Length: 439
Figure 1 (cartoon, rainbow, N blue to C red):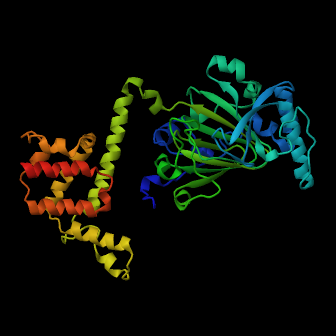
Figure 2: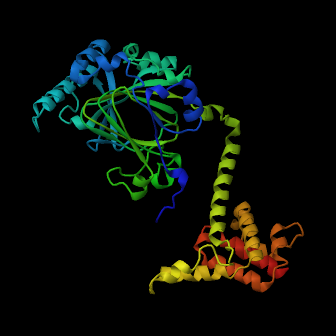
Figure 3: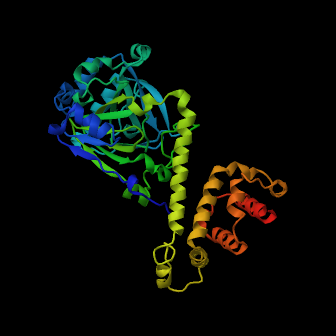
């Protein structure tokens, strides 16, 4: 089914120079508007930029800083270069940091000598070292605001001395800082984060593709009640046309910062031996969402989505200035004759809708609003509706009681013919008709 796109689905990542960087501009122009932005050279002064570079002695430096006894949790993919978020596609394995660094050195030697298909020697301490594209140090904690987690799991906390919180973040309370490093080229699945994210590149290169939160309808996120609910079920190796048309790509180099707002979908491709550090912090929107207000927020969001859908439907049937339906028959008349059933249905739909006058369309709009408001009533049987008395306070009765049978017939036929009303509950519509008939 073709997905109808809107202007809000389009992505435009702001690409800013270091001169444009300030806490005030970031807060007022970017974070508050929930839009992604790149800050070129934003962390180029970090000590990590010069010291962690794997192509310039950085691997030995990292091992010395972290220690040979440190054990980290790595992500092992079942799909070679692609790291999908669901548990069936990967597993978490504990490896010694020294073993991972040793494997990176071996991989670096292969890259330098351009030797292909060279098998690496592995032992019990070196997990997956014969499959360099399947292992990824993903989200290894450097810092966590929760003290218990900081003491127990942040085995890379000594690296904190080589990095600084980006100045544009000001005095924001950082939730966590994480270390990301891949040995061979890798790809992440499409996902969003429940926090604001500041991704900083230390070494190598990353290409990040972004989609607005409104793109959910063609990115098919996992069910909210399951694991990896923030990941998309889409196969990134077979992107759809909508995925390409409504995304934006940015290439990040050492020293660059990418701000990925909360809820924005992103997919990351990393070159060999790329190192990144990210900062997560809670957005003001999330912080201000009080638990006892959840039901209200949900109703407001649903109401806005329903109203938006209703307005779209009504625009499709609204009469133009010349009295014709806004979906004019002019375009259909230019199409060659065809026995295709779909075209016949479309022509019939336009014909029925065009027969409705302004008053009938107004009545139809009121009916749609009431159906949306009373959709739960469709669980009742037709018999209950037929036997129910007509109240003078009944909004449905108020609409139908003064309508001429011929006009009512046109309205109902137009709704039956129109695909735009396919999602409405016709049991409820039939009940309305029965009420007006028995009155």
